[in-house]
Length: 266
Image (tube, rainbow, N blue to C red; front, top):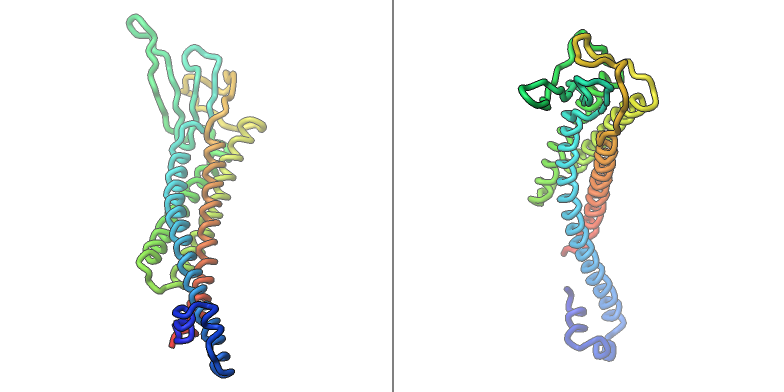
């Protein structure tokens, strides 16, 4: 801070104005006054931006891990379709992307016992396109989320240690945004395609010939949590991408402030 600003603080604003200043001193005072307060404003703006950026970084990192976990839950879920059958042997069948689960009543000694059984698909199954491509879309989405997890974690760790690598951070955030949006498209396509064909279309899904029940005995289709979970996963992924976009904009703004602060250094 220059001598003119220190003098103003010591005399007070009114006392400083009433002191004798030449025209040259007045001009120097004006330049010094504006420069000092412009520098303070930039430094305060930089500090506020860093604090806000830190909160967004932590939130984005947590959301990235959550979206990755939700993608795993969708992949291993056995409730992509819930079918109820008009049969005594098997009443409810849970259809996942890779396996079919069902409860079967087995005649025990003196009571009926519910036994959870599952069978994997083989060549005798007729698997419709919405499930075949649904597998690929969910696997692709989870792969891209894993990439986002690695890149975003690296970028945020570098940001926390205050390493001066803005280009590194921007490139990692850009990759994270791209893969998050692509994974959201894959997830949304998979869950909506399955839901629409299951309830409003005609699925070609057929059980193998040795399965306890057949599709002709289908009585009722139940709504499952897969569709709302997929929509929530997509919403969270897009929100996380928006946070990374904010980080990119914040890095650019901080770079501009840093360049402006260089002008005030002696």
